[in-house]
Image (cartoon, rainbow, N blue to C red; front, side, top):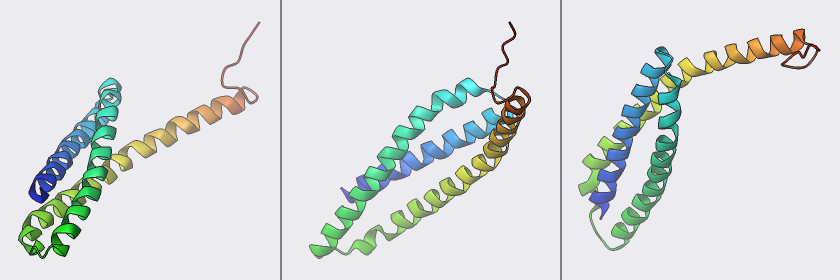
Length: 125
């Protein structure tokens, strides 16, 4: 059971890393539809990742209480931890690309709103 959860976590992590790499490429090429389509998939994967992490902790604690030598899972867990850190770093890279673009759009909208007396769209009758 523990190995199955670790493998599921690893699979989800690798899928998310792949999705984020695709996101980075799509941001660079301004393919917004692909980004939006992947968002819901990534959200589901992140929720599964979180739930499986909780389940893994429960299973490891239970195995330890039952006297199982949980060190047999050390290599697998270390590998999973490495991949999760890579996912975190990759996500930071995506954020460093997306956040400046988001700020640029916000600045443009704020400027237009200010020029139009507090509204985004100026209606001329």
